[in-house]
Length: 525
Image (cartoon, rainbow, N blue to C red):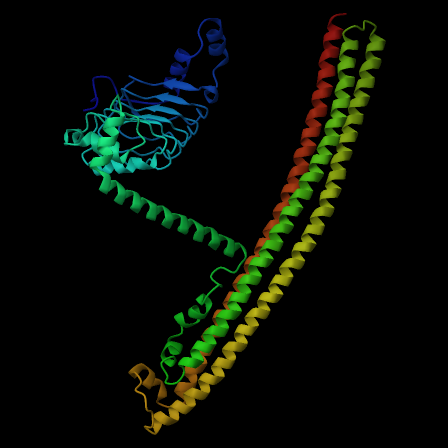
């Protein structure tokens, strides 16, 4: 079906091939000569043809980041690869190759026109990210299952589709199936889909379409719910209260509590257990609501901090630009004067005055930077104090909530111990009215065994509560430390270092300009 290896040696896309292609397809005449002598930056190339070159492997295209059109047709390519850096690609032709699997296209999210005509592809797959696809040609391949075409329903922008030459095209009703289930297509196999053909296809497949649309709607709702739940979970994690709005912590206390699971079968404790659970879950819910409110406070504080920082930086930038613009007026006037001065002493005087004003500009800009450093230092200190207070308050209240959980657990433990002793006495006297399972009966062999079981359950529960407290406190402390450290690094150290470098580079440039002009002037004497 596709081209086979011929007498020419199979090729790999390499540096030499790319240079030749760019030069051949680049500007001609004088512009071409200049481009060839100076070299063409691959990052500036928008269109590239690599057809009829016997290419077996796609490689070395990582510099072509601006490329929007790429032709790789009529080669012997077996695998789609090496395209991840071509994120601006809009048009891609891989027709007349030996490709068997659609893959390697995930990064090409801007792709609008894709041609895979005349390959060896048997399945439509691995194109989920190509949501901007308008034109898709996959004719003359090995597609056999009409149902596989439903994969293309995700491409809402697709208007032109070529499937001609695939095995399923010989099936009765092929075109009606495509038109009915890919109803957004305007052109199919090089022909316009007319109104009558569309109506006939819709009528024939009406029941199947309704069922499919219903299933798609249900799947869409399910996906929306999953996304919503995921977003909520992320919010709850950011508030350090994930899974606290329910019985999760209570249930986790019993997951690794084998003794507690057995003891829960003791006669007469159903109400006690239910009351314990209800009160415990109620405290967890209060903790959950409190955590979300505190997260809002912290989030608001962070947003206000960044607004304050950006305002200070913008105000400082405006003052700096004002100083630079004023200097540029002086610079322009000075440059105009210099080209007209013939007296060497006058020239030196003007240059000296210019350099003095450059130094004054440096003083002004560095002064503004020092002023900004002081401003940011004060703002960051205030923010750090405020966040420390919020975090400390959060920890204190969370610990108070969990202390209530411990008190509940202790009360429950005492009640369990009382019931266990009473039950033990009944078991030993054969006065127990209710039947109990063998696992539970083994705990009532003597007083020490049952008391150890109840105490062991209590210890497990307290450990789970302690672990939850440690987790919440550790995570919020880590967040506070990393947040403050990053702010210090980004806004005080890195930003200042970068700004000082920018100022020095500007001043050096201004001095170099006058020095170069001065040299030219001297050369004219």
